[in-house]
Length: 255
View 1 (tube, rainbow, N blue to C red):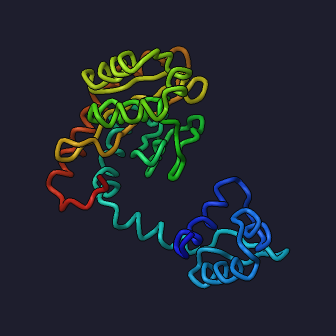
View 2: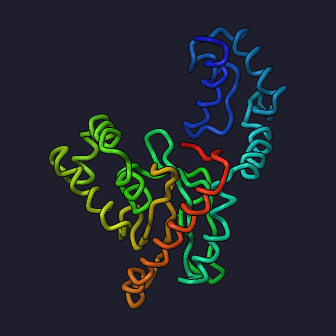
């Protein structure tokens, strides 16, 4: 394993839910001697990506916060989408949250959120939260707009999961489900991610390629549940507006 890969592997260990790791923990997990491990840890501390804590352990450091701020400032997608997201809440319901998501590895990740001004139950969506690839309006609307070749690759790599979660027996049924969403221009789901949560999402593209999705997420009471489907034109319009604005920007948005 090369040095850059070792540094990355150390940071990835924190994805397992342990907030603090010792040099011994890291060395054991990666099969490295303590001397080598300590040298890599020291470099990460100097860069601000690890922080020494009590008990001879190390936690993720403030360097991530610094670079996250830089990323937010330079992310064209967020900059273009934010005013549209605020306007979407104004035109629909302040008892909801609007999220902006993009595909990341084998999941769909929230990169920005704006919460409505009126009281409403908290959602689990926030920047950095990864959502299942095949469940929820946000994920489905992004998948539905992938090219057939890419969509089939996703299917072949996750066939067992797809059969279990979507009840699609084969590629033909899977493709049919998502092409229906593509033709509709939006995805509407109820209680797929969490009980009572309704998601309404539309695709954002650039140069004819899907790059993200915008979603209105609400937890309505029984009386207002039917209202959400009335927001479909507003969500689709917001996605189209962001798509149009991105076409005027220098192409720095992630593909």
